[in-house]
Length: 126
Image (cartoon, rainbow, N blue to C red):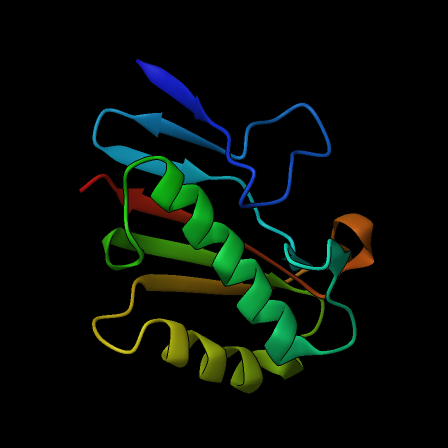
């Protein structure tokens, strides 16, 4: 049975979708934007800070569904400019210092709210 995930520790959906779906022992997050949950503002024009904010939001959704940072199996990183790959990779290494999840990184023409990065994940419940 699929169960929608909803937490106030990550951005609320801005459309007809769930922040995530828990299904059996897996958690699937929707793409998380770089919204700083403390300030309530989007992180713009600062790729490292934006990547960190998006990853923090992914982790918040995963944790609210019964997973952990360490149980994240795969992420997909959508960027407006793959020229920022090295900066994003540096943040990824800080957030996942050991046994990082599998990852795909793709360049896209545009993202919601014109942000520079969006990240989604698949995780296991712990």
